[in-house]
Image (tube, rainbow, N blue to C red; front, side, top):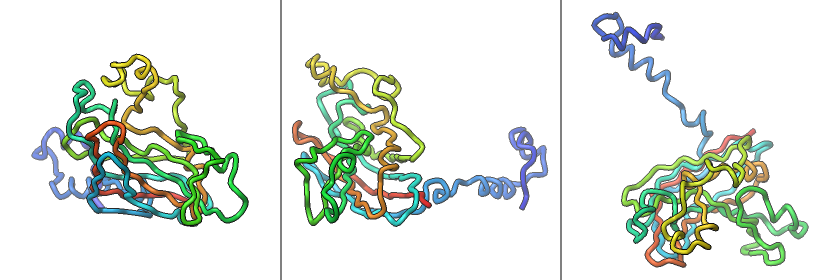
Length: 247
Protein backbone atom coordinates (compact mmCIF):
# COMPACT_ATOMS: atom_id res chain seq x y z
CA UNK A 1 0.00 0.00 0.00
CA UNK A 2 1.31 3.48 -0.92
CA UNK A 3 1.00 6.16 1.77
CA UNK A 4 1.28 9.86 1.03
CA UNK A 5 3.94 11.38 3.26
CA UNK A 6 4.00 14.95 1.98
CA UNK A 7 0.56 16.44 1.39
CA UNK A 8 2.15 19.81 0.54
CA UNK A 9 3.31 18.28 -2.71
CA UNK A 10 -0.29 17.70 -3.68
CA UNK A 11 -1.40 21.23 -2.93
CA UNK A 12 1.62 22.66 -4.82
CA UNK A 13 0.54 20.75 -7.89
CA UNK A 14 0.86 17.18 -9.05
CA UNK A 15 3.38 18.21 -11.70
CA UNK A 16 5.90 18.93 -8.90
CA UNK A 17 5.69 15.46 -7.38
CA UNK A 18 5.80 11.81 -8.34
CA UNK A 19 2.39 11.18 -6.82
CA UNK A 20 -0.21 10.00 -9.31
CA UNK A 21 -3.98 10.40 -9.31
CA UNK A 22 -4.29 6.67 -8.53
CA UNK A 23 -2.08 7.17 -5.47
CA UNK A 24 -4.44 9.89 -4.22
CA UNK A 25 -7.51 7.73 -4.76
CA UNK A 26 -5.84 4.90 -2.88
CA UNK A 27 -5.01 7.16 0.05
CA UNK A 28 -8.53 8.60 0.09
CA UNK A 29 -9.97 5.09 0.18
CA UNK A 30 -7.94 4.39 3.30
CA UNK A 31 -9.41 7.50 4.91
CA UNK A 32 -13.00 6.63 4.03
CA UNK A 33 -15.09 6.17 7.16
CA UNK A 34 -16.73 2.80 7.54
CA UNK A 35 -20.19 3.62 8.83
CA UNK A 36 -20.46 0.20 10.53
CA UNK A 37 -17.37 1.03 12.59
CA UNK A 38 -18.77 4.41 13.62
CA UNK A 39 -22.42 3.61 14.36
CA UNK A 40 -22.55 -0.19 14.42
CA UNK A 41 -24.59 -2.55 12.23
CA UNK A 42 -28.16 -1.90 11.14
CA UNK A 43 -30.62 -3.56 13.52
CA UNK A 44 -33.80 -2.17 11.92
CA UNK A 45 -34.71 -0.36 8.72
CA UNK A 46 -37.64 0.95 6.71
CA UNK A 47 -37.19 2.32 3.18
CA UNK A 48 -40.83 3.09 2.45
CA UNK A 49 -42.06 6.63 1.80
CA UNK A 50 -44.79 7.40 4.33
CA UNK A 51 -46.87 10.51 4.99
CA UNK A 52 -49.13 11.47 7.86
CA UNK A 53 -51.25 14.63 8.09
CA UNK A 54 -52.66 16.01 11.34
CA UNK A 55 -52.25 12.61 12.97
CA UNK A 56 -49.64 10.01 13.89
CA UNK A 57 -48.36 6.83 12.24
CA UNK A 58 -46.03 4.02 13.25
CA UNK A 59 -43.12 4.09 10.78
CA UNK A 60 -40.87 1.39 12.24
CA UNK A 61 -41.10 -1.12 15.11
CA UNK A 62 -38.19 -3.24 16.28
CA UNK A 63 -36.97 -5.22 19.27
CA UNK A 64 -33.54 -4.69 20.81
CA UNK A 65 -31.16 -7.65 20.52
CA UNK A 66 -29.66 -9.45 23.50
CA UNK A 67 -26.82 -7.39 24.91
CA UNK A 68 -24.69 -7.02 28.02
CA UNK A 69 -24.14 -3.28 27.61
CA UNK A 70 -25.79 -1.10 24.98
CA UNK A 71 -23.34 1.64 23.96
CA UNK A 72 -25.32 3.70 21.48
CA UNK A 73 -28.32 3.93 19.20
CA UNK A 74 -28.07 5.88 15.95
CA UNK A 75 -31.04 6.86 13.80
CA UNK A 76 -30.22 7.80 10.20
CA UNK A 77 -33.30 9.19 8.49
CA UNK A 78 -34.56 11.42 5.71
CA UNK A 79 -37.70 13.45 6.33
CA UNK A 80 -39.51 16.74 5.91
CA UNK A 81 -42.53 18.50 7.37
CA UNK A 82 -45.21 20.88 6.18
CA UNK A 83 -44.15 22.98 3.22
CA UNK A 84 -45.83 26.22 4.27
CA UNK A 85 -46.99 28.06 7.37
CA UNK A 86 -48.05 31.64 8.13
CA UNK A 87 -45.18 32.03 10.65
CA UNK A 88 -42.66 33.36 8.13
CA UNK A 89 -39.94 34.22 10.66
CA UNK A 90 -39.81 30.58 11.77
CA UNK A 91 -39.27 29.16 8.28
CA UNK A 92 -36.14 27.03 8.04
CA UNK A 93 -35.68 26.83 11.83
CA UNK A 94 -36.80 24.25 14.36
CA UNK A 95 -38.99 26.79 16.15
CA UNK A 96 -42.74 26.42 16.14
CA UNK A 97 -42.55 23.24 14.06
CA UNK A 98 -45.28 20.71 14.75
CA UNK A 99 -43.97 17.98 12.48
CA UNK A 100 -41.68 15.48 14.18
CA UNK A 101 -40.73 11.90 15.04
CA UNK A 102 -41.00 10.31 18.49
CA UNK A 103 -39.77 7.06 19.96
CA UNK A 104 -42.10 4.99 22.10
CA UNK A 105 -40.68 2.38 24.48
CA UNK A 106 -42.82 -0.71 25.18
CA UNK A 107 -42.21 -3.59 27.58
CA UNK A 108 -44.04 -6.87 28.29
CA UNK A 109 -46.66 -6.79 31.04
CA UNK A 110 -45.59 -10.21 32.36
CA UNK A 111 -43.91 -10.20 35.74
CA UNK A 112 -44.39 -7.69 38.60
CA UNK A 113 -46.61 -4.71 37.90
CA UNK A 114 -44.40 -1.86 36.64
CA UNK A 115 -44.00 1.07 38.95
CA UNK A 116 -41.63 3.86 39.90
CA UNK A 117 -38.47 3.90 37.79
CA UNK A 118 -39.91 1.31 35.40
CA UNK A 119 -42.32 4.00 34.30
CA UNK A 120 -40.38 7.22 34.80
CA UNK A 121 -37.12 6.82 32.95
CA UNK A 122 -34.83 9.83 33.00
CA UNK A 123 -34.12 11.93 29.92
CA UNK A 124 -36.50 14.06 27.90
CA UNK A 125 -39.44 11.70 28.22
CA UNK A 126 -43.03 12.82 28.26
CA UNK A 127 -43.65 10.70 31.31
CA UNK A 128 -46.75 8.64 31.86
CA UNK A 129 -48.86 8.27 34.96
CA UNK A 130 -48.19 4.77 36.43
CA UNK A 131 -51.85 4.61 37.41
CA UNK A 132 -52.96 5.08 33.80
CA UNK A 133 -50.80 2.64 31.85
CA UNK A 134 -51.34 2.26 28.13
CA UNK A 135 -51.48 -1.49 27.59
CA UNK A 136 -51.79 -3.16 24.17
CA UNK A 137 -51.07 -6.74 23.10
CA UNK A 138 -49.66 -7.63 26.55
CA UNK A 139 -47.20 -4.73 26.49
CA UNK A 140 -47.21 -1.39 28.29
CA UNK A 141 -45.80 1.89 27.05
CA UNK A 142 -42.99 3.13 29.29
CA UNK A 143 -42.85 6.59 27.72
CA UNK A 144 -42.41 8.75 24.65
CA UNK A 145 -39.22 10.59 23.67
CA UNK A 146 -38.59 13.19 21.00
CA UNK A 147 -36.36 11.82 18.24
CA UNK A 148 -36.21 14.60 15.63
CA UNK A 149 -38.27 17.59 14.56
CA UNK A 150 -38.57 18.63 10.94
CA UNK A 151 -37.60 22.13 9.88
CA UNK A 152 -40.38 24.68 9.74
CA UNK A 153 -42.00 25.04 6.31
CA UNK A 154 -39.20 23.53 4.20
CA UNK A 155 -40.03 21.89 0.86
CA UNK A 156 -36.71 20.07 0.56
CA UNK A 157 -35.91 16.71 2.13
CA UNK A 158 -33.30 16.74 4.87
CA UNK A 159 -30.99 14.02 6.17
CA UNK A 160 -30.65 13.60 9.93
CA UNK A 161 -28.25 11.47 11.97
CA UNK A 162 -29.22 11.31 15.64
CA UNK A 163 -26.96 9.37 18.00
CA UNK A 164 -27.90 8.66 21.59
CA UNK A 165 -24.69 7.57 23.28
CA UNK A 166 -24.47 6.03 26.75
CA UNK A 167 -21.72 8.52 27.66
CA UNK A 168 -23.71 11.61 26.68
CA UNK A 169 -25.86 13.64 29.01
CA UNK A 170 -28.65 16.04 28.17
CA UNK A 171 -27.74 19.68 28.74
CA UNK A 172 -29.27 21.53 31.65
CA UNK A 173 -32.40 23.47 30.70
CA UNK A 174 -30.62 26.69 31.68
CA UNK A 175 -27.92 26.16 29.02
CA UNK A 176 -28.58 28.56 26.16
CA UNK A 177 -26.82 26.29 23.66
CA UNK A 178 -29.58 23.73 24.19
CA UNK A 179 -32.29 25.89 22.61
CA UNK A 180 -33.03 27.57 19.31
CA UNK A 181 -32.47 31.32 19.50
CA UNK A 182 -35.60 33.31 20.32
CA UNK A 183 -39.19 32.20 20.62
CA UNK A 184 -41.41 31.04 17.82
CA UNK A 185 -43.40 33.66 15.96
CA UNK A 186 -46.60 31.92 16.97
CA UNK A 187 -45.53 31.92 20.61
CA UNK A 188 -44.71 35.63 20.46
CA UNK A 189 -48.36 36.27 19.76
CA UNK A 190 -49.05 35.26 23.33
CA UNK A 191 -46.30 36.15 25.88
CA UNK A 192 -47.54 33.45 28.27
CA UNK A 193 -47.14 30.83 25.56
CA UNK A 194 -43.77 32.22 24.45
CA UNK A 195 -42.29 31.78 27.92
CA UNK A 196 -43.23 28.11 27.92
CA UNK A 197 -42.18 27.27 24.36
CA UNK A 198 -38.54 26.36 23.88
CA UNK A 199 -37.28 24.42 20.89
CA UNK A 200 -34.27 22.13 20.83
CA UNK A 201 -31.39 23.41 18.73
CA UNK A 202 -31.07 21.09 15.76
CA UNK A 203 -34.50 19.66 16.53
CA UNK A 204 -33.20 16.97 18.90
CA UNK A 205 -31.41 16.46 22.20
CA UNK A 206 -28.76 13.96 23.43
CA UNK A 207 -30.38 11.22 25.48
CA UNK A 208 -27.74 8.95 26.96
CA UNK A 209 -29.98 8.22 29.93
CA UNK A 210 -32.50 6.58 27.64
CA UNK A 211 -29.81 4.21 26.34
CA UNK A 212 -28.54 3.45 29.84
CA UNK A 213 -32.02 2.36 30.95
CA UNK A 214 -32.85 0.09 28.02
CA UNK A 215 -33.15 -3.66 28.46
CA UNK A 216 -32.68 -6.55 26.00
CA UNK A 217 -35.98 -7.33 24.34
CA UNK A 218 -37.38 -3.81 24.72
CA UNK A 219 -39.61 -2.81 21.82
CA UNK A 220 -39.04 0.60 20.23
CA UNK A 221 -41.53 2.25 17.91
CA UNK A 222 -40.62 5.20 15.70
CA UNK A 223 -43.72 7.34 15.35
CA UNK A 224 -44.36 9.98 12.69
CA UNK A 225 -46.38 12.87 14.13
CA UNK A 226 -48.06 15.99 12.78
CA UNK A 227 -50.01 18.42 14.92
CA UNK A 228 -53.70 17.85 15.42
CA UNK A 229 -53.89 21.19 17.21
CA UNK A 230 -52.94 23.35 14.23
CA UNK A 231 -54.37 22.52 10.76
CA UNK A 232 -52.23 21.72 7.75
CA UNK A 233 -49.24 20.07 9.43
CA UNK A 234 -47.79 16.92 7.89
CA UNK A 235 -44.80 14.64 8.42
CA UNK A 236 -43.11 12.70 5.63
CA UNK A 237 -40.36 10.10 6.02
CA UNK A 238 -38.44 8.60 3.12
CA UNK A 239 -36.32 6.13 5.09
CA UNK A 240 -34.90 5.33 8.50
CA UNK A 241 -32.02 3.03 9.48
CA UNK A 242 -31.36 2.18 13.12
CA UNK A 243 -27.79 1.22 14.07
CA UNK A 244 -26.50 0.05 17.43
CA UNK A 245 -23.25 -0.69 19.22
CA UNK A 246 -23.37 -3.16 22.10
CA UNK A 247 -21.34 -5.77 23.91
